[in-house]
Length: 178
Image 1 (cartoon, rainbow, N blue to C red):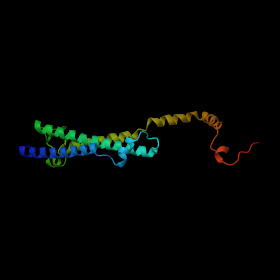
Image 2: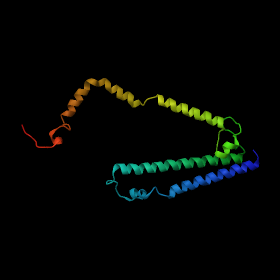
Image 3: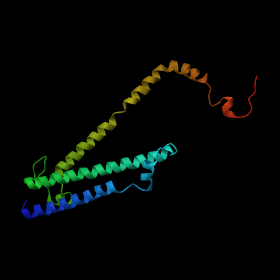
Image 4: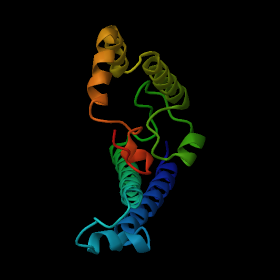
């Protein structure tokens, strides 16, 4: 790859890096909305509905996940800039072939040529499919509990001694003594 193309890709990488750094800076300085400071300024969340607290927690975790994704992109860009300095930019890390310039225009921090990237995607899809074949270990525990059918009646009777939702205090009305 000639020096003119290297300078072009360096420029692209620096532009992408600056954009991602601006996004991270915005995420760190801006709040999620008017409720963001509300939760942290209260002494207690006792009066908040659990769904409201859960929504705030979800928003914070989502924001943190997006910020980590942006930071990972910045690290990938920095690695690509290091490759430009080393003279290894534009070479596939897996097979050693040159990465197509069109691919580098779209993803200047690409590490793999399109063929190796497709292979890696297919491998990841295969792993995902394999993981779907296995059921959670909890299901084995639930199925083994079915073996103790003889105890189910006894457990139910033990619970019924303490009352149920069908007892007179739950139905309302007058208590009739016998």
